[in-house]
Amino acid sequence: MRVLKFAKIDILLCKSYMWILLFPVLVLAIVILEPDMNSLYGTIYCLFGGLVLSSLPFTLHDPRQTGGFTRLLPARQGDDIKGHFLFSFLFLLLFLILSLPAAGLGGLFKGETAALLSPALYMVLFSFTLLFAALQNLLFCILHANSQQAQQLIRMAPPFLFFFGGVSLLQRFPDIFTVLDILFTPAGSCLCLLAGLVLFVLAAELGAFFVSRQEG
Figure 1 (cartoon, one colour):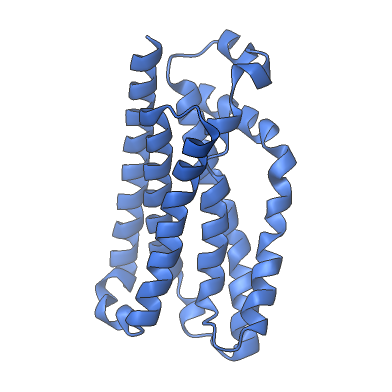
Figure 2 (tube, rainbow, N blue to C red; figure 1 turned 120 degrees about the vertical axis):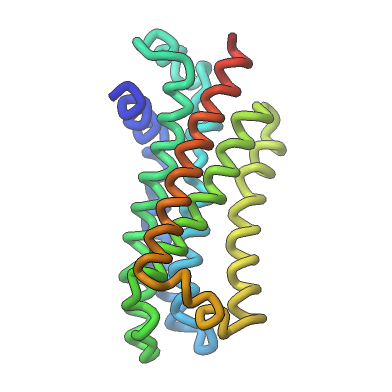
């Protein structure tokens, strides 16, 4: 419950950035207007945008901006960090949901519907997104970056690796989905998502531990 309260505070602090929720509309336009673009890129674009901003609380949650009131809340050390991770998870989940109509409408417009109807595909994509988000958030916790340049590097490096890595794989190995069929079975996708969730939670615990040690 304490972690959830910190996540709610993060939402309030990030409300001025909520215009980014219109990003899927831009993605839909890009997918439709680019004839050679696979509509699946729509989902990858949306998750890329979500991944860039999912770590916002790590840079906005500053006592100078919040008045230090969060330090007065009844909580254990590390609960605020777990709240940041929970915010990241909810933010990415929201972007995944918003990506469905963007990629779906683009797919219908281009006649690409088979892959877009596969829940397993989205589960696997989301699991990899969680892994990159866990890495990104953990870097914030471990490096404790204060300079704006370092924060921007940590925020942008994992998303760009996720996006350009995914796009490069699709372009270089267009038949990758047939090669990795086991991941896109119901059992394989569930295991992949479960692994992503477990690693994300472990990263949150590890991040809270590092920050508690630094503050202690």
